[in-house]
Length: 208
Image 1 (tube, rainbow, N blue to C red):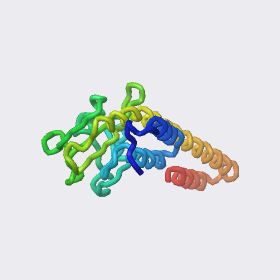
Image 2 (image 1 turned 180 degrees about the vertical axis):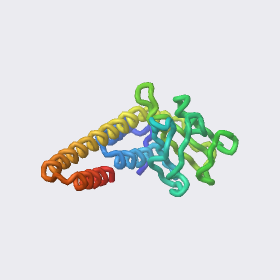
Image 3 (image 1 turned 180 degrees about the horizontal axis):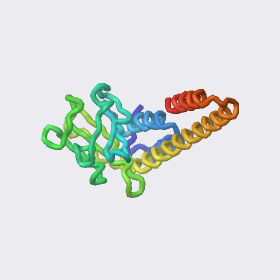
Image 4 (image 1 turned 90 degrees about the vertical axis):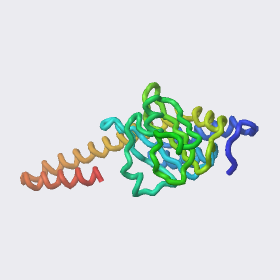
């Protein structure tokens, strides 16, 4: 599939299609996979990642990626201001480095990487994540490609937030259903140990 470029007569139509695809997906895993596929239409890549903000720990964690060693990135967490990804999140601006070997902020995850692009995903004035692309080529990223991704970044942030809300509401519905089942169990038995056992089993099932 050829990349989207501004000289393509179908450029605007393609952007509309990409925006629709992003905003119509509510399952977070499917959404992140779709974002990766659509990003590849704009900037063909070998190394791609989306880091999301952990509002409790106030850092960023690896949520989805392509081209990384999973045993390295699955537990990778980045503080605001740390590395290029953390810098993009802290300063709320796109960070482009033509040769990461010359930038002391760079955190090496993929040894072959030479250039990196980190785009903060902003929801109003709040960062929800960072889209990160690395390339084995020096000065790989073009201004036009970066501009297109910057245009889509806010829509990606909205879509991720909507997916989080959907997931939270789904979890709440499951919890309510579990509590209802437990209440029925409580009316059908007077054995307190049995009630606690059923509650524990129901909670474990919901969490899993």
